[in-house]
Amino acid sequence: MKILRQDWERVVEKACDIANATITDADPMYAVHVEGMMRLLDELEKKYGPQSRILATRADYLESFSERRALYEQSLELARNAQETEEIEEIMDSINQLGREERAEPGAAPNGGPATQSGNSGCTDGPPSVS
Image 1: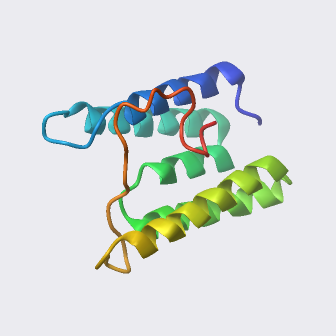
Image 2 (image 1 turned 90 degrees about the horizontal axis):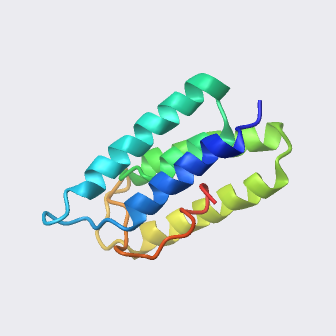
């Protein structure tokens, strides 16, 4: 079942909230918004079942490189099975970005590390998996 536009717009809105928050002690809203995103994705997964967009978006907000990669790979398999060409391309872009982040993180543990975020982005869309 395809995710309804109004449901996905809620995800985009939450992604903008996250993008406009910063990861600092001075801005505790980042963690609050990420937690809200995870609850929203749980709700949508209950409503629509396993969806590549939901898994890829969840991966976008995980800190662990290995956990992110595992979810991207699961979402890619779902997208391929559903023959969702655009979604496959977006997931592949996310996987490539993850690889760049892994290589750029000096001394990163092979099993994970923090995802980078920028604050006050003027967001109109979320990360690739959300847009």
